[in-house]
Amino acid sequence: QVQLEESGGGLVQPGGSLRLACAASGHSSSPWHMAWFRQAPGEEREFVAADSLRGGNAVYADSVKGRFIIARDNAKNTVYLQMDSLKPEDTAVYYCASRLNRILAAYLRSGEQYTNWGQGTQVTVSS
Image: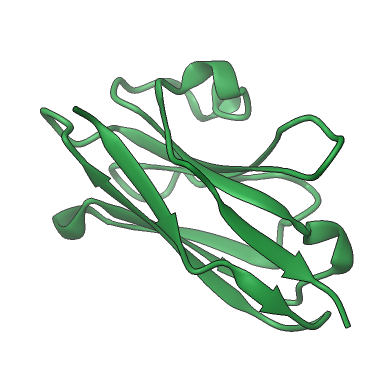
């Protein structure tokens, strides 16, 4: 059974950094796309970043572009989200998601494109 497990969340001050990790297991083959979404209390889930099995196709939400970097370690079946210059509005539960088959990067912002989801890890940015 496919499982995605996030880790690395926590409490940080504004301007601080965190590195999230998502370990994937149970896939019959490596998913082509892996992504990060987040959801704040009372708000809808929003796209954060996505990457592909092969590099060069990373996609970011405008709100995090220039501050967050997504990276994959295919040998470890793990995707990371390096978050720098964190802001209070980044506070949310962050979820990892995967998609087995390749699609164009332009479609990766929709959660409906992903078939597997992790349980989430809490990120809180506050003084």
